[in-house]
Image: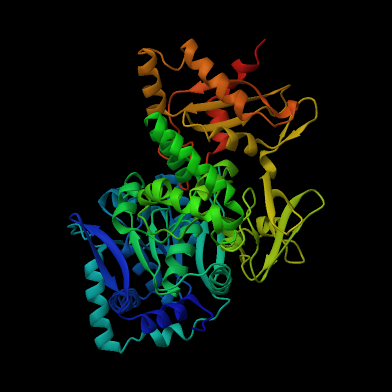
Length: 593
């Protein structure tokens, strides 16, 4: 296929893969799906329905929902009209949504259910451009400014009959440089910025991504990261659809493990938190196995590590090593693979640094995690690892069409068709981020190795400068700690202080199991034996770090950080500033003499 816009890609895909299964939702305990042809009919009727409401090219239409096939239909209908999808995380608060609707000049909003409707109901009066809501779950409503999803489809069918509405004809009028979507970056301070991504931005990323990693119509995706975020939208939503693959929408983040076993994905995108949890669970199970099973497990992992040069080239060892690898696969690796469905070709990791230890562990079990790198503003992919050449501890090599270099201060900058048009209604921030030569300044610090693989050190703004003048990146230390099954989350602190310390959130399940075995039932976090346990964990994790960048002291935190309580972004990244402000007194207590 040859296409230059997302609208054209959609039309060509539904024609080429008409009979292929496309989207699946779990309804009443069963996975129910639609083919590409059926999806095309729904999208055309939905787009026609929007046109009947006088939605025109360039109008902003929001989607406020968790991942479902209706999210996909809405997005393709909006963009097929030449309108602009404004993606909104369903976890955002009313004031945050109010700001996005108002700043983006949103006309209509698809909302998942009555909970989301009630949360945003008052915005019709507050946001001058807002006209009505489309209720995606078809709940009963008699409000004049709320339209059921099914009603909009019926409106679309009638409008088609009256006007000869033709989505393909409209799609052909859309240009590559036309605005496709507004994605508001989730900042920890101040108002979010609306990244303007064009059809060309996203199409360039699809084409370059598929060139670097093979995906075809046999691939099955499990979608659970928010479609509001560009990472999931690019991997499963756009790239998967362009290749004729099928997408299953996970019921929730909590059901991902169960859903993996049911749908047996071949490709899956996630942030590192999923892999950290999987790693901890595998190690926890092994630690409770009989000694002979533990011995077999670690023997197999040893064989996997010995075979790593082959695995990282998408190959298998031969000879005696090949025989041992086959035995290890039968006895151990196959069991781990079954936990992710049994037919996974690879995971994709992005959004935050992945621990090298965890990546190498899964690779040793013949489960490849391809780590990449990018930002919302770059559509998102800048670099990635390839199946035929994986380097752990790096985020791979630049994809086709993207120039990447390291500025004098160590910042990673890039240039290419993937770089956004700018920030909506924010020329000052645009000029600060994209220079006169078109280089986008990522805000990340990194370096290239001898083979042209990029290694991320940390966020530029996260660099800790101690009172002794040492510049220290917290991410490597944090990644070293999350490899422990007893560590749920961690934030390393020490800016303008005389040594490095950390706040560690203990993994509740693992710690409670340990405490039960030790006979500890009350005040587990403050128990002397618990402190000794974490002392040992921290000391082992810091092995190999320079003396000035090792964690000298820590405090344990009992409550797990979450999106709901404000410490995590919707893509499960820790909001460092929020944590530091929330636990300011606890941090100060670390440094009291």
